[in-house]
Structure formats: C-alpha cells, structure tokens
Image (cartoon, rainbow, N blue to C red; front, side, top):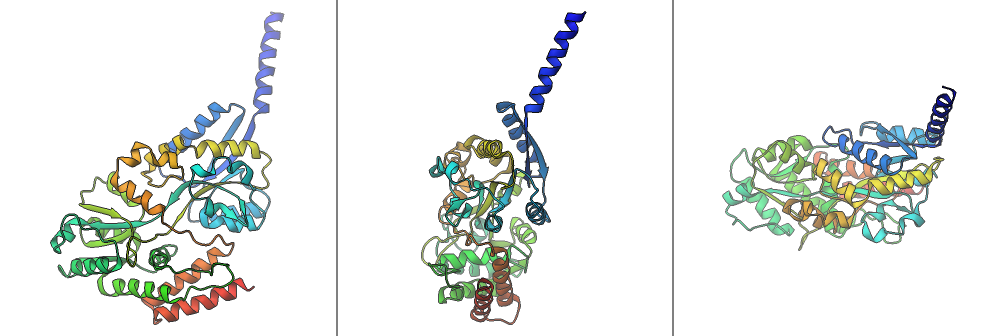
Length: 404
C-alpha cells in the first residue's frame, strides 16, 4: 500500500510539474462567424498538440469595438500576447512602441508571402500577413447580353466600362448600370480609391513630404465615379447593393470575396463575371488591406507567440481557413497555388487583382486621413462640392494634420 501510494504521489507530482511548466498565451481575434470559428479552434488545437508545452486562450473581438479595445489594452501595458490587426492599425500601434519588431524572424521566408509593405513601419516589420483583402468588379452577364454585348465581353478600360454601364442602365427603369454606395463609413472611400490609384494618383508625394490628393488625375477619377453615381447608380449601403445585384437589378458593382461566400451559402444562381477593376486604358488597381498577426511588445512569451503566428499563417492552415471562410486572398504564395484556388476562375480573379492592388500609406494617422478622404468623396457625391473642390479641401486638411 505504501509503495502504491508513493507511485501515485510521484505521478501526480510529475503531472503537476508538467502543467505548471506550460506557457500560456492569449490570442485576440475577430473570426466569430459560426462557419469559421470551428476552423480557428481546430488550428489552435493542432498547434497545442504540436507544442504540448503551450496553451492558447482564444478571445473574440468584434469589428464594432475591437480596435478601441486593443488600443485601450495596449496603452495600459496589458492586452494579449498575439493580436489580429487590420492592416491600417499596424502603424498606429508600432509608432506607440506597442508592437514587437519581428523583422529578423520574418526575413527568413518573406519571399513566400505577400503583404509585407503593410506590416512595415520605418523599416521594421511588426506583423505577419495572414489573410489579405481586395475588391474586384462583379458583373451580370445576362444583363450585358440583353444590352447587346457578346458572351466574351469583359470591360477592361474606363471607356468600354462606362459604355457598358450606360447600355445596361438604359434597358428599363428598374435596371441600373452601377451600384453606388451611400455615405457608409469605412466603405465609400474604398470604392473611390481603386479609380484614384488606377488613374496613377497618389495620396502623398514619392518622398512622403507633401499631400497631393487633389492632383489632376485624382480629380478625373472622382469625376468618373460621380458620373456613374449620378447617371446610373443604384445608391444604397453595401448589403442593399449586393441584394439588388444578386436579384438581377444591377449590371456592375465593386465587392470583396465575401460576396462569393454569400452566393455559395445561399445557393444563388447568377451568370457572374468576376474580373479586375478597369483602368484608364488597361485593367487597373484596387484597394489592398488584410488581416495580420502581431505580438504585444509587453508580452513575456514572445517565443511561444512567434510559434503560434508561424503555425496559423502556414500555407496549409491558410488553405484550411480560406475554405472555411470562402476567402480568396491567402498571403502565402504556396497556398495560392493550391487547387482550391487554381480550379476556381472567380477566386483566380481575386488573386490576379491583389497583385496589382495598392495599400494605403503605412501611417499612424491613417485612421484620421481615411476619414478626411471619405468626407471628401461624400461631399462630391452627396453635397454641394465639386470633385476638384472636395479634394482640394481634403488636401488642406491632411496637410494640416501631418504638420502637427
């Protein structure tokens, strides 16, 4: 009995020591969708099996208040070890010294991933690209056919794009050529910037010293967007635009890969075109963003946090995630070569577009700059401002902001 008791005691002690030796890390993330959350949990479970000395605690954030929660936690020296960040938040936290510089570690396989420019601030890498995001042009082939276009037509420049929109718009009073956003925060400016970048316009000069958002090219791009909005636009929020498009009422809209997910989940039947956003002469540029994984500068478990980031963003796990979320834009080039993407022409359109997309400046003031641009587009479309006037006022405001 005594010997049995001693053996039991030794086993209990050993298990206690193993448990005590485990490193516990926290990961704050945004994927609460019931179609996606189980995949996140499974990836974490696989990580813990491969790393039995590490426990991961998942905490869900919402897009409604997630940014605010992260800023408050990091500013107080608290927060998780690993955090999912939107690309336009990285500079803000890096500038405040709240993210870990992971440049040396990430340099080992940087050529195998896209999106590093959004994670780099003042020459240092502060996050790893995970799932990127862009927007493409969606079209209704049946409406194009009714407007007299053949089965192979795809608009690739502003002239044939504009002509096709007007042709569709003239079919009947309840058919619109173009889906145009209302003053919907964080969305409207992302619809204008593809036109802006396709025109060759820039927000700042090459040396980053001057705001040049009211250039001739920028004005011409906003004029075109306004013509489509005023003449052929079904004007509503993003969801209502997509509803009308899927119901055969709109010829063309700009949207993300979430629309492909909706079409699949709702088993929608639509004769769909998914292609690059047109440019002045050739296919143009689009808006580039994404989800990144970063490490809290205050974390005491940086090595374990790096292991988790590497595991979650591995090509295999990116494919798993994209399949669960119907995502089109893994940051991993190896993941993009998976048959899930190569066998789907619509997903391929996103991968082609992302290679010519542009991300906003990596600037700690971007959240404020974004707001200024958005208000300028609102003024040009819904207010009394002319495109040139609205952009000129935006340039003055951004210049004042950056001079503080």
